[in-house]
Amino acid sequence: MKKFKYLPYIIFLNITTLAIMNIISGKVIGVWIFTLSAASLLDPINYLIGDTVTEVYGYKQARRTNWILLGSSVLTAVFLQLAVWLPPAHGFAFGDAYAQVLGQVPRVVLGAWVALFCGQFLNDFVLAKMKILTKGKYLWTRTISSTAAGQAVDTTFFYVIVFLGVIPNSLLLTSILSAWFLKVIIEVAITPLAYYVVKKLKKVEKVDHFDHGTNFNPFAIKQFFR
Image (cartoon, rainbow, N blue to C red; front, top):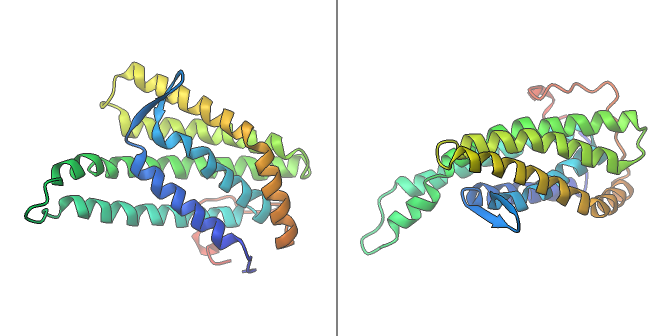
């Protein structure tokens, strides 16, 4: 497998943003006219990173990155839940508050796993296919289109898994639509940043991968180290 200088740092940033999202996702916030999870404001950054990996390094590297993200989410969930289950030390008065906030993390992480797997893989697939279709031109069409498709699946799965039965169904539907719309709008707004990052990475890494003949099966684990 070819070694890339900046890919490990991109994966590290992706893992960090996902870990933050897993913790803050349980809070529903109001932003202007939108009702959404606190993590929704960070989600477009996560998708921008995914778009960058697929656009520059190709679908195989994006698939590898996605499985690393899923693994890191599992590890995060295990230790957060362990911290909740372990009895608090004598004199520690915030055990209940700690459990109340982080006790929801397993459900949140389950939603994040399903949302990430379905949404991100769809996002990467659409972007890779559109890159071939557009012959590498019009980057904005594939970043926005792939995000719109991926986020529709991502947001729906995540909100249904995390909030169904927790908040009223009317608020759930409003939250899904609000979060999806806001994420796509943010993606549109940061498109100039996507152009800048992608252009710089292609230049310094000397790669601009097109996924001709790529196996798009997300479960092609044997290609993980290729």
